[in-house]
Amino acid sequence: MALDGYIFNLEREYATYSNWYCENRHATPEKCRARAVLQVDEISVKVGHNHDSDQPSVKKRIVLSKLYKQAESSVEAPSSLIAEVLEGVSDEVKKSLPSKEVMAASFNEFRAKTYGNFSLTEMLVYNLISYQMPRPKAPF
Image (cartoon, rainbow, N blue to C red):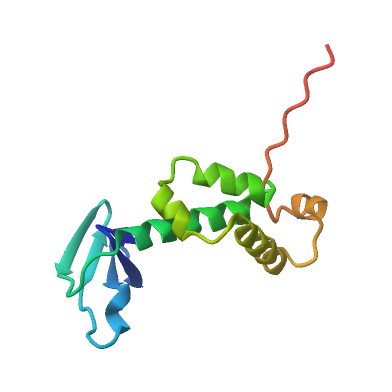
């Protein structure tokens, strides 16, 4: 979870809330003890951070996360996905990302690991990925 320029990792989920801790919890030399609680639609930070936020790094991770989620659930070519997700992203964040070629190769590798040696047709037939087929028009 990204919040105010910091990344929090899920620690534990309960029925009505979840506990989160700062990703720098295990950092050296000084561990960050920041914690957050997420309840239905409210987030509260229980302990403050002992380090500065890193907005560009957080934005970069959000973009990469969106790219991988798209790659996982789409049959589009990596170059199309990358162009779609990068639309509206600041130049500063784009400069911090890997090259488009590296990201495309990474997506292909990710898909191969996720779906094995299935062809695109087999992935669609076995519902490994979703694709909304256009409805045929009635012949009359």
